[in-house]
Image (cartoon, rainbow, N blue to C red; front, side, top):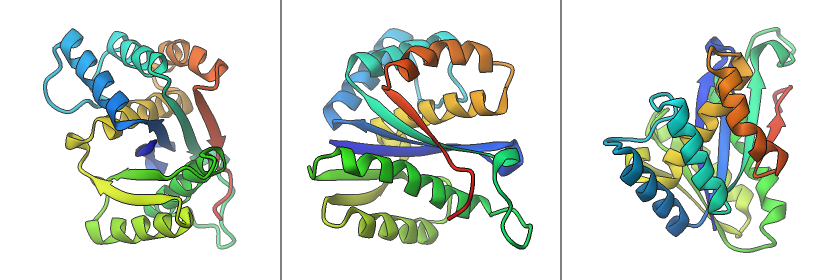
Length: 201
């Protein structure tokens, strides 16, 4: 199995979400191909760009394929301030959410070798290289951590849609109610599970 990772939002937007999606590469490619064939989508699949109906269809394909996700979320107003009263940087929050989401998966892999694929688009490659090394150390021989261009990774693009869905819900966007209706069955079945980060490690 592979864990595909992507994030949405930031503290200045009110919340940051980080999704860690478990799918085989073959399942991710099949979902992506079917979605594009039906919707006619060209270019990168992004949660911020697709319609509500398209989002619902993608998540239905994800659920039907047996996909599962842990989504780590942090709301600005619920995050306990650091001792000096300053908020964490988005990079520090990104790292903490990534660690939380991936750590929820590791006990469930049963020791099976797992690859963790992280979107390389948000931060400087050198910085992300350090993030990858930290995750690699945390895998403790269970798998391999790598960076991927989201435009070339079916799984990372699916993770983007899931992260964006939870971001909309967390910040109460104008689409939050409809997206909540779309996501609710997956939350109820635990195909998507949420872990809240309330304090920086």
